[in-house]
Image (cartoon, rainbow, N blue to C red; front, side):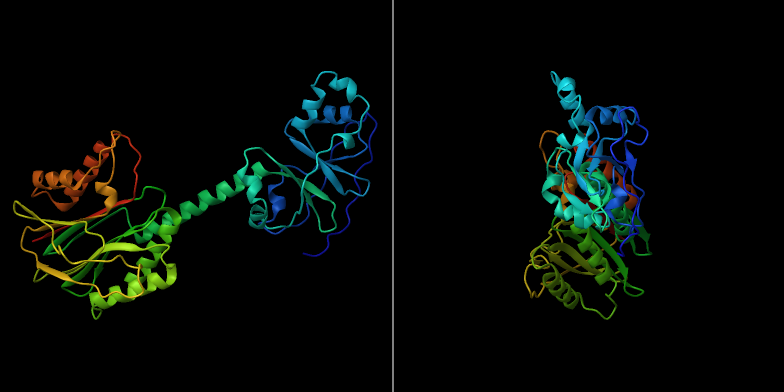
Length: 405
């Protein structure tokens, strides 16, 4: 940043009966968008030779000013005086008598100085320890020549960071819902399906995909990324991009081997992914199933409840550099129903500490054997809500229902 033009010096200490120019507001300098100056509480300064009573009178007339900078004859900041510090001293026993003729230089509080054009996030890194404390701390802002440019509190910085995080979360949520919709349904001549997803936080680590491969084949996937929040949502964004590369010429085993290697090389065991992957030929009802450490796949055929692909579980994706997935298979018949879900459903707890459990889910499927998949999804959703009884959602919750016809 270029050296700013010189500014007029601040007024010398005024007489006690002349208050209008006591607090001098420094004009702002041009600053980049993320400069610390944009968070300044104010740009008011007072000369070090000002009497304490004169400052108290001036601050009485400006109740919104919580602190001011104290400067010398060269406009170099010496420290700050906060409203609380000033009136705490005047409010003590004999305080007014003690400070009747004293100057503000005797009450000045030392404060760290920062360039006003310093990036907000660079300042936050420097002040990381201060921001962890509960008390409000004041800082001085200066121009490149070291002249006063304003005062800043740690509270100003925390509010800005909080608002920035909220905006980032809102954007992350919009991006994630474009990849993992909260609801999705499809109706084909031989297959109907419905998907439901609800994150425990604004964003999360559950992922599902429904990808048409050709006129007959469809790829279905339901995954759960370890962890929650923004970091896990980044992994789901990666999954969404990688699933776009799956084509009719891709083999399920080869795809999962490449996906595993990519996750391992990228996240280095910080995150891994469990999932159930199904390549289904809708015309023949033939399903190739790969369970990558997930195990949450149930099936209902008539009055029987089954666990298709049982015995073919593999390690989660991303926990080892190489994997050769074991695949299972089954043939779906008319009326067969598959339910894929993440552990956020069966591990949901009520106020009594009880889990929702697979047993409750089995009972629900038996109670509604012929319900259309979208209606069945709503039944499961409402039943889980009733079970929670207002208890916060403890984990991301996603499920997929498909019925073969």
